[in-house]
Image (tube, rainbow over all chains, first blue to last red; front, side):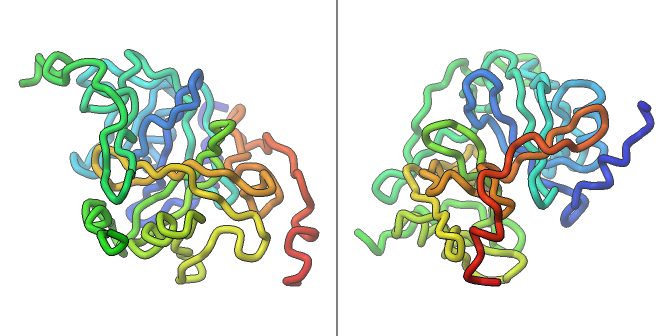
Length: 133
Length: 133
């Protein structure tokens, strides 16, 4: 049954074979990240239990947290009525999903026609990525 | 100040001038929908306080709930570190965001290599859309 990947064919892969994938914290419900997945990324996320995305900037598969150690352990995988988007319910290791050292990437809030930083830095990114310059 | 829309220019509009927009219930934290916005949709969502998206299938602006009455009242607008995705925190009128009559569009859950329906229909879509055939 491990080779039964027909469920992957049910996803309506978009342009470039990608769909948006939301990671949501399984304890707090906080939306941590929105990234992109191709077929292989979703397959690996399901098989390994760690969130794997397609990096559009690096143009390669990307194990979330591969450098920082802040991996996302996959608790549940859901899709929507159109099967063109994914939610991963995750345990966010280190409670830091954002490369800026914040819990969530969605830390900019619109207030009076301005984007305001609305969440604290938990850990200095220089300390998170220190071994990688 | 109502003409100050420079905050819209800070968004990194993607292919076709669109970014993904997540709607999250302000009370429950449930992720209701993932839709798409262009500049005008985001501007109207902010100005009117009702979620407006760009429908890729209809190829036009789409006031969420325009037919069903299940509009989304916008409580908060957030963006992420890359400014290429949006979260609307919303009050979902009728508690139904999905055209299938469910609370959330994300009702398919992966279990043993199969997508299983994991949420009940709250209201028969035939009753929701009855005036529109």
